Length: 117
Image (cartoon, rainbow, N blue to C red):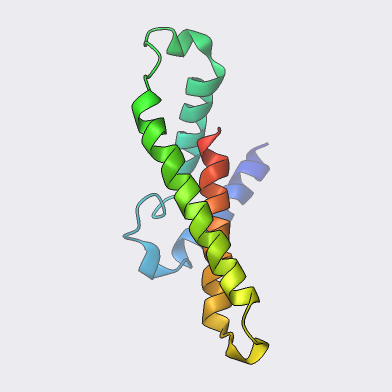
């Protein structure tokens, strides 16, 4: 067991010393500890009713009433954007347009998926 921990520690120190120095000032990236700690905390919050029994449920009717039409509007915009690209000749479409549409669709899908969690 001690050999395994020592090997893991050596790999950690190697990665920490040889990592990209430009990311040292980034939030939650300067060390590997914040992300696992947030993960464990979120497990405590989500998976343990005794932890959440102290608080009243959030009233999200107002924010959701604003969020849902916003998401519908964003989906409509992306729908129009995709079909405006489909209606063009292939030589009129630039890589940047395709990249923008795919990125927007991906981001909206991630936001929609994460909001249901």
